[in-house]
Structure formats: C-alpha cells, structure tokens
Length: 413
Image (cartoon, rainbow, N blue to C red; front, side, top):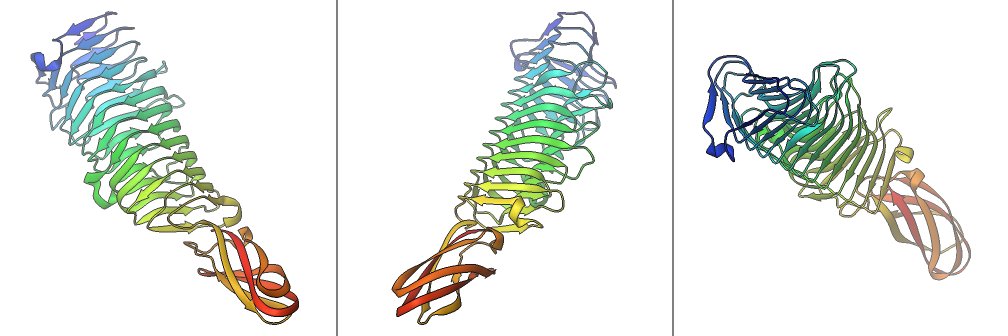
C-alpha cells in the first residue's frame, strides 16, 4: 500500500495487542510512505509472510510516527522490517520479532540527496534471531544526522544490535543490549563514516557471542570514526568490553563498569586521543590493553579501579601515556625505601616501586633524606628501572654516624 497523502493516520486500536493482525503473504513492501509529512501508524499488528519486502518503507518527508505497533517477518525474508529515509520520524513503544538472521528491525538509511535528520527509535522491544538497528548511507558524501536510540530493549541474537556506518551525531542511551551474537554496538565506518556518537547509560552484553563477542567494537575500517563518548554503561558477559582500532579518534571513556569479561575489558589498538577515567573493573582478566603504535595515543588514564592484569605496548611511554590516581593496580604514585650507608662517597641502591609494570625512567623523579645517622645526602640520578626495582645513584658526605638514606620516588608506568 502506498501512503502518499499528507497527514494520513492508520489506527488499529489503542495498542497492537487489541488489533487484528494484518498479514501479507506475497513479496513486496507492505506500506510505502511517500507523503511529504505526518503519516502515522497507531496500534496495528503487522506480519510479513512474503519472501521479500519491508513492512514499512518511509521513503521521504518528515514528521512520520509509528506508535504501539507489532512487527514480525518471515524467516526466509531478509529484507529489513522498517526502513527510514525521512526526517523527524520515530518508532515508539513498539514490539518487533525478527526471525531472519541478516535482516534489521530498523534501518535508517540515507538513500536520496534529501535531508534525513532527527529520527530514531524510543521505548521499543526488538527480539529474535535477526539484527537490531542499522544507520547507513547509499549516497556518497551524504549521511543521516541526529539519530536516536533511547530507552529500548534489544535481545536480538544476530551479529549486530546497533550497526553504525554513516552518521553525524547518534545518541545510544539507556538501552538494554543483551544476548548479541557478535557486537552489540558496531561502529563500522561506511561511506562517510561516524562523527559524534554518544553511548551512555546502557546495559551491554554480547552474551551469545561468547569469548569473541564484543560490547562496543570499531575495527580498522577505511573511513574515519571520530568523537566518541562512552559513559555510564554496564558492560559484561562478553569476550571483550570495548575494542577500538586505529581509525578511531577522540574517545572519552568515563564511569563505565566491567564485569565477567572473558578476554579484555578495554582494548585500544593505536586509537588516537583517548581518555579513560573513573572506570570500575570487576573480576577482570585483562582490564586494559593499550598500544600506541606510530600514530596512536595519547592515552590519559586516571581515577580508575583496575584489577586483573594490564597490557601496555608503547613506542613513546613519556609523551603518549599519562597515568594518575588509579587504584587496585599501581600505575603511578610514590615508592619509598631505605638504603643503609656507613661511609662517604658515591653509592647506589635499589628500592621497590610496586608498580604493575616497569615505570618509565623518564617519568621518575627522586628525593632523599637522612633517615638515621649523621651525614649529608644528595640523590644524583636514577640509573635504571626494571619490573621490580628502581636503582638510584647518590652521594654521601660528612658522615660521622652510620645510618640509612630514605628515598621517595615519584613513579608512573
């Protein structure tokens, strides 16, 4: 059916559960919306029984709305259930059953040179063996803008629950993303790439994916992915919590918690300009795995509770990694130790630093004082740092009573 008249409203009942189901048995789209504005569907139950075709296809216009509707497709129908190429168009309070593994429940796809802005999904349930929401473009140089996925539940077990390829600003907030088969949120980078994504306040678990499943994933795609905020999420029961690669730039990760992650909570492989703050890592295997490479970093890591092990591969530990105020695993702070002396002269001694990995010698500074005895002491330099100790060169002068020197070293891995 073609909906071409503006301000058309189709009402089945107060909700889809009170409506008679409309069932299409042959191929083709059920509803093609070509109206310029205000096409609405309320309280309708729809099932597509054909081998191809969408249930709803919003081809253009603005101000369209789908409220309290039910959608279901056929197992052999790989067409997406709903496609949106219109502005100010929202799917709200709906229930969707996706029975085809490759189909998406909602595909926000820029297909024309027109405007696709401020559209999305709110308070909607998506389940089944298929995939959830995809945001993409088929037009070179064009993309959707201002896309929203809010307060929804996605229990789809297909490869991706949210696949973001081409967009200028997307907000993925306050959702349950559970049981995904591969990546709950896949920042894919299609024709124009991803710029500005907010991922906030979600429960994220790629549980069906097992040890290879990822909560939030962005690999080495040929299109840039920039300005990503990942905050206040609970991420668990996956192989990896966050896994971002070298094409991602400007990441703010703040106040996320990680639990029951099989491999690594947060893996950043040559990702650029990354801030990791206020994270809570619980029963982790590897809490952080950071690699700078030639063009990755810098990484700023502060105020995190770290457990498990830490993996840092750095070509420039001095300039590309900044650690501060982390707890659990010692990444920075102070090391204090004593070295006995009984005569004047140039000497060396070692103290334990207690860090989770070898501190950067260029970041270490040392002060010294006479702890017992009578003499003057001057710390000359830090000679070496290894996985356990700091070796310090120092001078003892005017000794009259033997004693020991106390060193305080500021350390940072």
